[in-house]
Image (tube, rainbow, N blue to C red; front, side):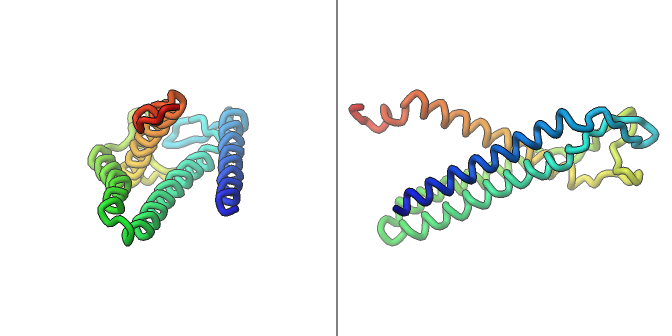
Length: 170
């Protein structure tokens, strides 16, 4: 009964996230793409839903990280009394997530983006803070890595490699 509820909630959350993602991508590419905005005396194309798409991507990344940390800690607490060594091994996923963020932080650059020979600035002409460039790079690198992990996990799942590794006779 409990597994059915979890499965149902997971499916609803997945379909809801997919619907919002598809809607934002469609809006980004097909609504207001021909609008122009003047930045630093340059006319630039400014799709209307760029900010919404970027914030949605940040939200998905944040939700993923929070859930991985929470479920990792919950699993650690639940398994620690029965199998302390196994529970510590289970923290490896959280440790890898921390390593991923630290590595992405050190790989990130604070170099300003140059557009038409000038550093990128906001609509008021103020330069973009270096921390914004670093945050953006970190999120992009983490997303690339998580996408690669998901793609590999999907490939292993489709090829039934996990069953072969476990020694199952199926």
